[in-house]
Image (spheres, rainbow, N blue to C red):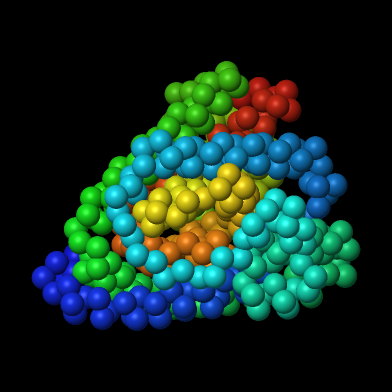
Length: 383
């Protein structure tokens, strides 16, 4: 990042010629979006076993997860709309052709794909998501007969994640080129806006943590014991930037804290796919920040569709480095937002990722306590 800034400042003409390198990097990311979505969403939905199999606790988990992630999305949107860190950035734009229909009726009609192959070829993210969620639910319903289909999608997911990890080796070059080209084209005002974004991102994550603390307070669970239980998992998440890596110590410590095993066994693993609060806050912030920086006006309908798309595409990518970047690439390709903004955000992502992942773990740790209270069970802290 620093090298890109220096080149953009001291050699702006040369810096502008580096733009194709950033474009190639973004093309590599876009090439894996469809396979990744198919693998992740089908396996995540089929892995729930269906709501009937999960039972009462599973249904309550899903309801709770959808409620709190909706709050997270709205918080990320509100933080950008209120504090406006992207104002004055004048970000240039290499835009994908917008795929969002102009009116609400057309949007609703086009949610359902007439052909999966057509949706994949056009990169229509919402249509892919809707198909995968329904297909995954159908796979869960037929159970053993879908074993080979689910195994194929799981293998596709693994290959897509590995492909993504290979592409991320090129991230330093892509970020360097994007940073240099953008500063060479737009000047140093870009840096000020990126710094504001990082500050607003940390503030928004802390506000979401306070919201989670308020939910915990409503359960009347002993807070000192809870804080003691999650310190280790949050430190693991902060250091590794992986929500999945923090799962084993979180399960162990929350069981010692007194959360019933029946609730933990469903809420914590399911939360890795459906309850990534920190990531959800960040996704909304990143999308609307880039739109704001590029001075792209978004109608209320478009903003709602962006939030809905993020809510659906953010499932099932916990533990994958820079998975948020892939989700945002899918979104930007569908809504015609500037792709170069993604590489800019990736350049400062290391400053946001630790706190984002820590809030993911906090969100996933509060969930079983709330669900246990909803079930009428008391937390009996084991000292």
